[in-house]
Image 1 (cartoon, one colour):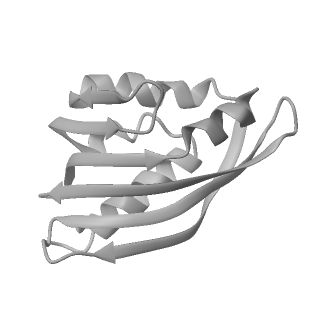
Image 2: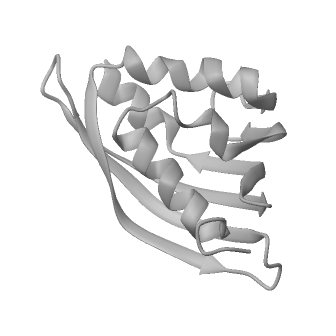
Length: 132
């Protein structure tokens, strides 16, 4: 596995694309049959495949936010495909000026340079409050 295909590198490209609001680049980080679960969303959500992820990430273009990832810690596991990433999105609603911090823990499985599975534990209530 090249250093660019490592789970850590793929994760860093993912959060870089989210914070740069580049939804056009994000789906290609995922395998065609990737599964992404958001267990803490209301209601919990499950995205299957690149088309569902493309629709999900397209929302980035319409959100009135600017944000960055901070306090990023990536934990390697005994499985070389799996990492656990802790970080927070810190940002500002550009319409209201309201600042926000959204804590996240993601568990990613990356195979052959693509995310095949992700469980994203985000504080969805904090993000919804920032959008209000």
